[in-house]
Amino acid sequence: MLPFSRVTIIGLGLIGSSLARAIREAMPTVRVTGHDADAGVREIARAIDLCDDVTDTAGASVTDADLVVLCVPVRAMGAAAAEIADDLPAEAIISDVGSCKADVLAQLNIALPGRTVIPAHPVAGTENSGPEAGFASLFRGRWCIVTPPADADPAAVERVSELWRRVGADVETMDPAHHDLVLAVTSHLPHLIAYTIVGTASDLEDVTQSEVIKYSAGGFRDFTRIAASDPTMWRDVFLANKDAVLEMLQRFSEDLSALQRAIRWNDGDALFNLFTRTRAIRRSIIEQGQDDPKPDFGRSH
Ligand SMILES: NC(=O)c1ccc[n+]([C@@H]2O[C@H](COP(=O)([O-])OP(=O)(O)OC[C@H]3O[C@@H](n4cnc5c(N)ncnc54)[C@H](O)[C@@H]3O)[C@@H](O)[C@H]2O)c1
Ligand SMILES: O=C(O)C(=O)C[C@]1(C(=O)O)C=C[C@@H](O)C=C1
Image (cartoon, rainbow, N blue to C red; front, side):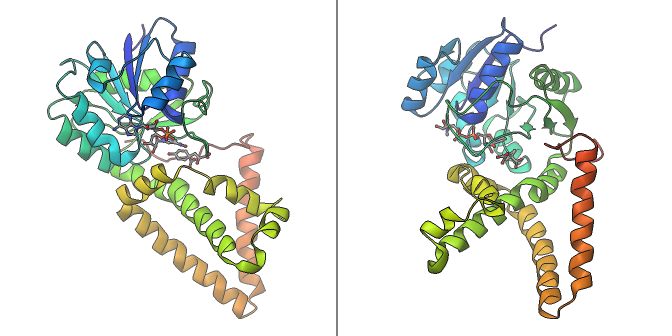
């Protein structure tokens, strides 16, 4: 049996539009309704036939929904939830796809008191945004981490999990705070590092302009892809997951200082040993046949 029959997606950008496409492909009988605050995005969504219906107001999009998935930047979750509060059917489940979870759960609990809120995070994406950047296979073979509140109804958790399995994801359940700590190191910190490296390079007059472009075939080019990620999304992630990111940044800074010291004092052994360890990690991932690896998020809760 299908977990839901009428799904509303609010926010029709990369993730919302990918979810709409994936649901329509995997579960063609499910009615998908969409809404976006941006009239231009709604126009594109209609033009590309993204959903069965795209409504001009958030309220109109949820009146008969049995699942509403908020796919907006993490600091816009509370406002998006408040807009649907009066029109939401009593039995509807509310979920989201935000990249950090504790702050989003707090926002949703304030905006929708007493409602069934089951947050989730598909750990899949690209550096692109908007309704035309999405694609149906985005979640296939990727993790989706469901982060229910401690007192969540297990049946509601299972229905949300089943939706993500149906669009191809592997589902883990995790405590929201633990999720935020893990993702701070596996996703948020790498983005911060990429933004820093590309920003620093462009600040250095000597290597800017043609030279940054001309010689960016290798490692730097990989960083520029990540650093092209959406500014609104990532501003929100760093501010909403501040504590976990600052904790991981502290650890990272200490490790970077140790490397700095090793270079200054010609400690070749320290450099060699670290690089040998990190190379072994990458090789063991490839040997397991995962060249686009899903990180092991550890124990489920
Ligand atoms: N991009 C990724 O790689 C990725 C991966 C996993 C999860 N996420 C999470 O998914 C969410 C959406 O990210 P995205 O990459 O799809 O962004 P996006 O910029 O492509 O789309 C976001 C959409 O939300 C709309 N929006 C903003 N505020 C709104 C509101 N109050 N009501 C209705 N619509 C509103 C915007 O107009 C935009 O069309 C974010 O919370 C992000 O953290 C992103
Ligand atoms: O592959 C990318 O471009 C991504 O940044 C995707 C990525 C990640 O860090 O893995 C980014 C943010 C998400 O919340 C989930 C996935």
